[in-house]
Length: 523
Image 1 (cartoon, rainbow, N blue to C red):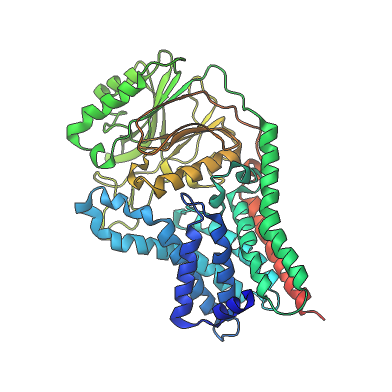
Image 2: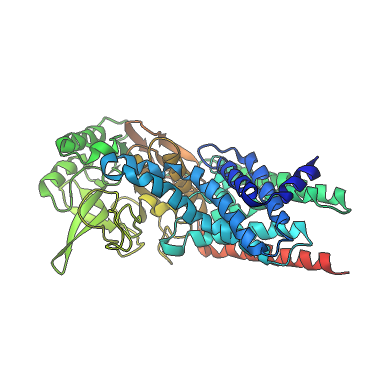
């Protein structure tokens, strides 16, 4: 039965091949947050491999591989990043017309990477070995994800390893191989049942290999993660630190309304001053928490400083204005404000969102950035640590700076925590915020560092260095989180070596694929 189904997929051509690839890609996206239907990866990647096998005999097999990969990727990303339409609905009069262009345009751009994956797969001399093809697909998919996180400032959203983000035991391996390495293992496990429909002898051997990869490999990852978590027990807390995270839950369409400016600040202050069993030492507001340029507006800063605890500080996101050669510059910043309303520390966001905070090739495109305000934001100087009184060294991450695996701390420096201020109100109330949180919390496991996250409309949380959520406010909730700060772990292997580890793993998979194919062809 399985062989018959495989032969039917291999026999498809033309628009049917494209349509099936599109459908398989869409199915694969349902394994990601917030759905987490991980078993769907098996039919998705097995079907993709069988369709590619059907193009083996074609004279333009590499071109067909590119086309099938593009269709698979387009279906995958049109479902996985459908929330990209949400920011365009905040101010529908100004930006809703972009939705028919932005959503398919982004999906098509991201689909270029699965296209390259499948094109490269068809270019390798692997036709004699279905097993080699699976290893090669896992390796090439991982390499393409690395490129997607790097090329043109990068957009490493929804990497395949994030399908396990809801299972802390499965995520522990990222402390060694990172999320890219987990992507490689995931694609390998999902694709290996494709060998069951191969012709020839050794059926029992193929069944054993497929079971080992698809069942035993995830079980081994899970068991290793369980053992690590069991050994961890409860993480100790940093002494004399009590955090208060404020989630005011202000809708994005109201955030910059001039009539609500005072009310927004008053809501943050009221939440910050709520009574607590243990008095907070640090109050944390999210990205661009209130509609004031706090670094430049003394009056608003004095009012905001009332949120700072006695002897403590307020940590908040705010737009700030600076000047360079008499030219105004706007920056998306994190400010540390003490009770005297003095700005103690400033961090300017260094990795800006294309089309969100600035327009690439401005002047050549007939559109403006999504974030309101005149002109583009200006990027800061790059990753650096902040010394904040009473806290370990802080690595600040504003909004989507937290999505870049291996690039959340300065090189050669070790912070005591990751602090992510974000405004996920842009992303709606469903997939976008949940995916963003799943991605951000993975950084904690990779780096062995606690993650403190303040989100304007959720999800705000404190995550320990094993990726366990110890305090959380959900999407659409208004309130506060009072929590201690978990201690950091010693540097993980991934914290020491970064993305070099998953790239070595991918290279090993390619070498193994070529060796298997050569052995299959040899007498």
